[in-house]
Image (cartoon, rainbow, N blue to C red; front, top):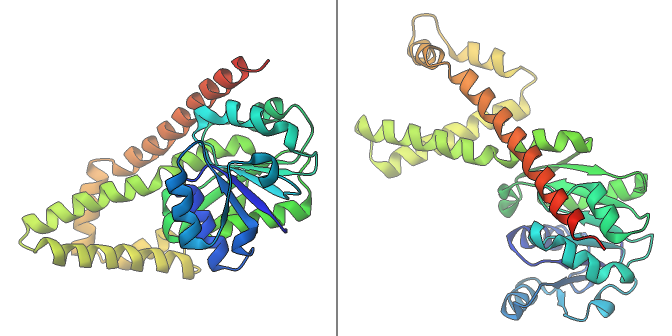
Length: 279
């Protein structure tokens, strides 16, 4: 890849730009960025990462290999309609727009071209995103490999079927908020038990990081690891009994399923709104 253009310059765009520059995936000057009108933001990215910026889309998209769509989903129709005549059928579109389907994007550009739909999460800001991505039939094996390299600069990236992206959204897209919710509860209980807030935070963060690392590096399942921590009649068992009593496992499962269903319904609304704007 010799040239990539970002349409949109928000936090997700910056996370990917930062990852690509840090991992030397592309020379900074060959990463082009534009947005609707916030020139100050473009100058900030140019100064920080050495990227190229422009409001001349014809120049920016000339001989571009891929265009990464990172504007707000509600602006997708207007933005794609404005640039579609500048895109060749070999240009790859990579979208991180929540709810905008591959079919909707295909209709907006009005031509057969490779399109990728990705669902990162906010942990991309620190290079720890868990990203699912789906592709249409025009994306080649080489392009899939390229997309994976781009997305992996911000964490892990896995190819899924598009219909699985709602599950990815419910699980990892919204997942950080579930962990923060758990953290809040653990922090409050620790303070109630007499630990200072700063000390409680240190213990909780390290506990979560340690457990995550164990899951990442061990060949044992989460169930096996849990059982190894749980001595009969011990403190862990006492705590787990409370979680079981309150059916926390069912609550978590329902939480993820509900978020996935909401993602699906929101996506349907967004797609309908986009298609209503088609000529």
